[in-house]
Length: 263
Image 1 (cartoon, helix red, strand yellow):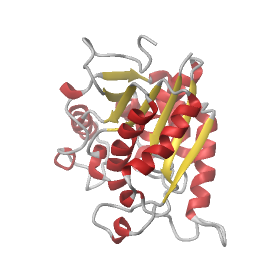
Image 2 (cartoon, rainbow, N blue to C red; image 1 turned 180 degrees about the horizontal axis):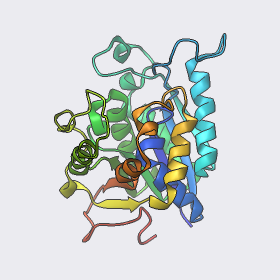
Image 3 (cartoon, helix red, strand yellow; image 1 turned 90 degrees about the horizontal axis):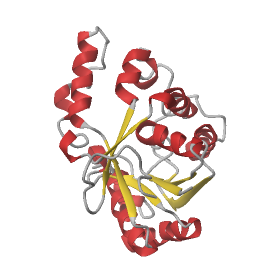
Image 4 (cartoon, rainbow, N blue to C red; image 1 turned 180 degrees about the vertical axis):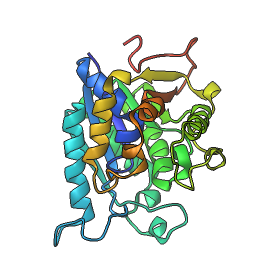
């Protein structure tokens, strides 16, 4: 069996793009380790949601621990940086934010975990962080460098299939699903990558219930009434049954269906 380290920017980032892959890996007997750059301090939360004196960071740590249990992850670690907020906001420039982190210093923190775990596989994000979030872009940069430092040879960039996302929203609209006003095909023209760029697609249909439960564990960020949890089961399956990756290095001769092929 192998060890998979999945590197993310904030708690809840593991749930939407990679939860099925992680749950499937754990069920197959692989060791799954979650690493987060930040605790998501600047996420949005409804007034009155937190207990008196409770910080959002504390709540999000609790939520990701529950998510890890649901997914079967064996270990959760944080690199100790602060959430950088959305691109162009003042939080980008705060000392200690992940966006301001020295790449080699941050990479060494992650590399220490990779070496401690004798990691066989590392997941990061694609080079534009799927949708341009500064912390997601930094996950790519730091993760790639950490793999070099640790000698972790197999690295996958978690991404989204832009072609399928746009097609899916078009189908949802045709089915009569009410979409938020800002969710349009045009809004996703720079989201993820094209189908042709993807090297690896993991079928997670058998883990949709686990994936949904992982999302629900992050109640501060993903509410029951959110788009992700309120859409019909049919469309949820259409949207989340496959998880897409780009394998770094030499492109596989044919599209892979696992992060562990050949291990």
